[in-house]
Image (cartoon, rainbow, N blue to C red; front, side):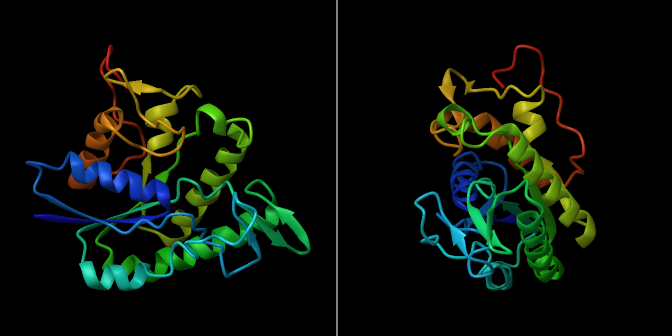
Length: 227
């Protein structure tokens, strides 16, 4: 039995649910502790959610340490798939992921949170998030996601022994994200993994988690695959 703990925001919660749905026969136990409508910077700097108010879910990482202590995971996956959406106020100015103040504040917080759970997290993995699709694209251009992912990679490197799970390369390797799998949408709302369309990518994620392989390059997908 492999205990897998999923931490992060609403994208983590959605992916965790899909991992649970495809785990049969894998020997994996999925513990999903993703938090909806949260930010790693909530309570650290003034924040505005997409609803132009404080995040209802508070700080995504508020319970990470207690979750790790409770679950004693073999593998911990951190997914902050919506982390680049919200604005934060730094030095009197509202900023986002490509602004230095926001990026520095988020990077420092992420590094601190990862370092705090590192000793008890088992094999610690951090998701490189894919570009949003559909209605989310206009308000969240590719450059914004690239800035967020660059910040995440830098934070992981500074902590050390944190594997990057590259969903960006797997789903959006050429800059154009795959939209469907098996005829169904992978992310019906453009951000969250849901339904049967998300099962194939969830199996790929689960395989990575169980093998504990270094995911510096995407898994090759055979020609003609739905992904």
